[in-house]
Structures are given as C-alpha cells and as structure tokens.
Amino acid sequence: MGKSYTIALEITIILCGLGSTLADLIIVGKTLAKVLADLEIVDDQEFYRCFIMVVAVITIILPLSMLKDLSGLRIVAIMSILTLLYITLVVLVEFPFFYDGT
Image (cartoon, rainbow, N blue to C red; front, side, top):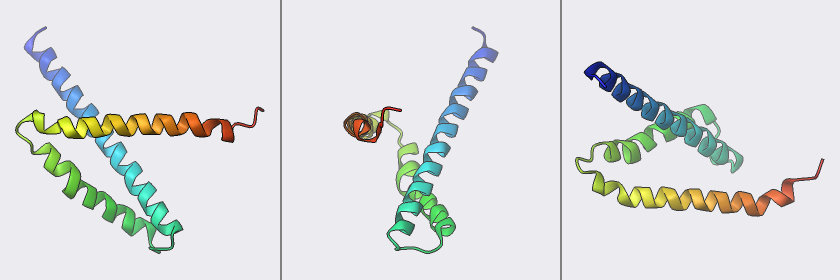
C-alpha cells in the first residue's frame, strides 16, 4: 500500500476510536444522570449529564490518553475484559426471567 492509503487508514482508525469514545461517554453520562435522578439525588438531569461527562473525561479518559507507554493500559484492558464477562454473565442469567415466550 502506498503512503496515501496508510494515511487514510490511520485517519479512519482515529475517527473510529474517537466515535466509540464519544458514544461510550454519552451512554455513561445519560445512565448515571438517570440513576441519580431516580434516587432523587439531583433534579436537573441535563446539567449533571454534562457534569458527569466532563468529570469522566478529566479523571479517566485524559490520563489514559496521555500515557507514553501502552504497557500502562494492561490493567485497564484486564478490567474491561472482566467487565464484559460480568455483563455477559448477568445477561445470560437474567434473560430467562424477562423472556415471556411470546
């Protein structure tokens, strides 16, 4: 492949990573704001959704993106795999209780 294809591929990978990060951030912000509103801890969901997203960027995403050595991400990778396994297990265990057979 030529240099132009390499650059196009790198741009595509960067945009894909950015898009998935933003999607995850939006989901986390909306979910936590809804949970806080359901627990009657907050009144204004929109403000706290934005606040949660900013805090998540500053405390989680920014430090992880500034690492010079990717070996520091091994703990994060292990935690994400364990989280995915936990979610899969919960879905498999809870699904029969929500499925009504129709």
